[in-house]
Each structure stands twice: as C-alpha cells, then as structure tokens.
Image (cartoon, rainbow, N blue to C red; front, side, top):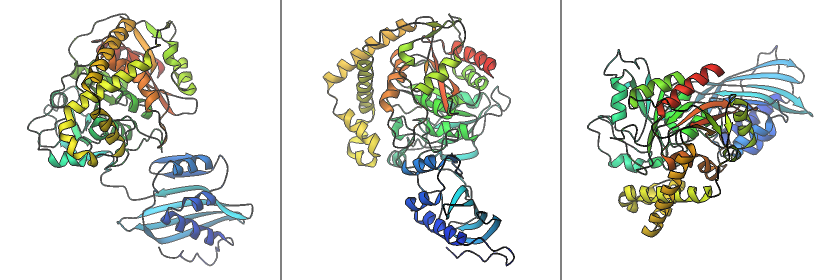
Length: 508
C-alpha cells in the first residue's frame, strides 16, 4: 500500500481527513472490523456498497460483518487519491487502486466530521470483475453446450445446470472436490438436459450445489456461498443455490435444479424467483445423481412465470387435469411463517379463496420421519463411497451423513412407514384443490442464522405427498423477497403453471 498522493495545492483537504482515510485503508487491508465499525458514521442513513449489494444503516453494515462475511477488499496499492472538499466538515475521497491480482479498482467515500471526528457516511468499493464467479459456476461457456435445435420453442434461452445432472463430455462434481476428482466424463446428457437442448435452449454452464445436495442454505464449504443479488449479504438458499443465483444475476434465464426437501422452493423465495418442484417422478431423472431416491424431484427456476411454464411445456408429460382451481388457505400453515412473510401472503391471497383448518398435530413427527427416511436413503446411495472419505466433506454436510450412517434398519423402516402414512394424509387433505402456503417461513437469513428446522416444517409437506409445488415471488413490507407456494395433487403440474401465469399477469 502506498501513501495517499498529494492533493493539488489549491485544494488542501480539511485537517485530519487524510489521517482518517489512511486509518480506514489500513483497517480495510487488515480486515480490522472494530476499526471499520468505528470509522463508519452511526445512524440509519450510513451506506456501504460493493459488488454484493448495498447496506443501509450502521447496524446493517455491522451485522453483515459480524455474520462472517469476508472483506471485499483485495490486497492492493493506491495509485491515485483525489479529495473534493465540500466544506470544513464534509469531503469526498475517490481513490484508484491496483489489486495485487491485476486490473484496477476504485473506492469512494463521503466523509463527515461527527463529534469532532471524521466518519464515513457513504462508501463504495469496486474491484475488477472476476472472469468466473467460482461460487456460482463450476464451469461455464458461451455456450458450454449449444442447442440441438436453434429454432425450438426455447431458442434464445440459456440454462444453468445444477452439478448433479449429466452433461455429455463433462464430469458431475456434486459440490465436492473429492467426488469430482473420481468422476469420469459423462457419455450422454441427462434426460432433462437433452430435452432442453432439443427445445432450443443452450447450456450456459454447470452451476454449484451444496455438497451432494444435502442442505438448504446454499453455502458450500469448498467453493463458497453464491451471492443473493435480490437480498445482498444474505444466504441464497439451496441446494440448487448456484442455479438460482445464476438466474437471479442474469447469467442464465433458466436454472435447472432438484428439490428433495425444498431446494427449489427455498432459493426461489430467498431470491425473488419463480420456481417449481415437479410431481415426484413426473420428469425423468435419468442421468441425475440422486440424494434420496423416492423423494428427489426435478425442478427449475426462472425470472418470469411465462418462462417457467414454457420450460414445463418441454419437460412435463403432455397432460393437464383441468381440476378444481379453488384456493385453500390453511391458517395452521400460514402461522408457521414469520409475521412479515405471513403478512405478504395474506395481502396476495385473491378474493374467493377458502380458509380451512387442518389437523397438523403430528407435523413434527412427520418432519422427523422424513428426515430419518431421507437420511437412510441418502446413506444407502452414498454410504459405501463416503465411509472412508467423510473428512473430505464440509462440517454441516458431514454431520448429516454421520447421523444418517447411524440410522438402524428398524429406525429406517419405522420412519418410512410414518412418512408413507403422512404422505397419504397430505394427499387426502390437498384433494383436488390448490393449497396456498409460504414457500419458506422467513426471508433469506444472514450467514450464521439457523432456520433449517422451521423451513422443513413447511417444505416437507409437498415432499411427503410427492406433490407439485410452484413458488411465486412476493416482497415483504421491508422490500425483501419472499414467496407464496401453490401445491396441488400429483400430476397437476401444468395446472399450477397455468394458474401461476394468470395470477402473475393479474398482479403485474
């Protein structure tokens, strides 16, 4: 780091400003969060922006830092520093930087004298854009795989493929370096990938996933956490997090993923996207690395309801039931959501929706049974390979597989029976109607906040019943993304997509 360049002689900075700027720069390079916290002005109007998004208010800036974020600043040297003095108590500082890794960046701060000390009231840091955001993508091309029919119905659309799907000539990485290292290139495309290519879409790249798709936060211990541009500095949701972030960032128009216990619905809610978990088994899973066979379902995310339905026209069986479109609201399910999420859904509910009370006194037992059965199935699929390699997994996923490894055959059988009974009851309760519930109980949490248990209480219902579930984006009163979920009987995927498109047009 070089010293602050000398300002023009006719524009000397106010006394003490250069020293405060140097303290800020030193703290930024050292990731000294206590000093950075002190140098940002108190109050609700202080701003800090970077590539991840804008933080508003001193408390929000501090909360993001304490949540475990790494400093955005790279090691660099200052090339130029310019000061525009506004008055004795206010000044703008703009500095051009050269990161050690190459390229040029810039930082800008608006300084104000607060209680005789210089404090930052607004700051922005920019660094050279990476050639590839490795938290979002494992491999990417322009395109990675071209369409096999440029005139197809999805011509012009690009797909981010979750790193569980076979792409011919590429390896499946499953979110873990150890798996990727032992994987061989795939001989042919997964069924869903082939259908999308045949319909005119191009594969933009292979997107990150939580290790072996066993998680809901979207974080990956090896490759980082994909960004959430709709809710900066918050989690993206997973395990289809890379596909979701790619769509939310505009890197792709379709995010192909999977949903076992919420891995489409949760990132859709956290990132303001449209998403569908299809009826279990409705879309072929050939060429898809499983997590828990019998519960895994193909799903996808888009930025519009129209495109969500267009993908369904390609991937789903060519049938629509034309069943009852009565919307049913269950207060017991809405009550599982945080107040701001529940309020957003209540404001969305169309006129004519019916309210109905469900007997959910055994819900926690159902969720526990599903988690146990899912774990037993996951260990049955992956246990032999993982047993000598558990230390290669990140801590959270390793703990889940360790728990799964200890499930006895008797426990697995009991859980499977309870889950099957619960699935039948859920299907009976849904009947021929369409049930309205939250896609996720909270807005996207900050890193370190734990909402997995409460989330699964909502997402497990569609999983247990093998039901299709479509997520429609909403916003809370604070402007944060959330979503309403429409759930129907097995096989009514197209009905849900048609209804979601009509409702989105009405609310546009």
